[in-house]
Length: 113
Figure (cartoon, one colour):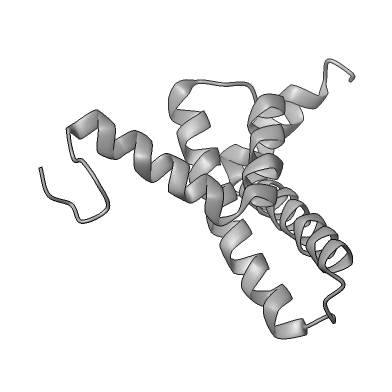
């Protein structure tokens, strides 16, 4: 990867346009996951389900991007993790939820201490 890619992505992020790139990567990951599941389970294609997958993947990707930025990770690692989180979809959100529940001392899914 060329050295100048990092500063270009950083400039786009500063303008707010970098989030579009990360969102597209997350949605792309979600699309790959959706199509793989359809093929494996031999289920018919559904536009409504695909749109739902995009919403979940986009949310997971953007949350991951925000966490990566807070941790000071590079734009390249952040982009990769956004795509992975998008592919994981709801699973990545669940994992983040579990991490933060453990971090603040909440046990179980009910929210009881």
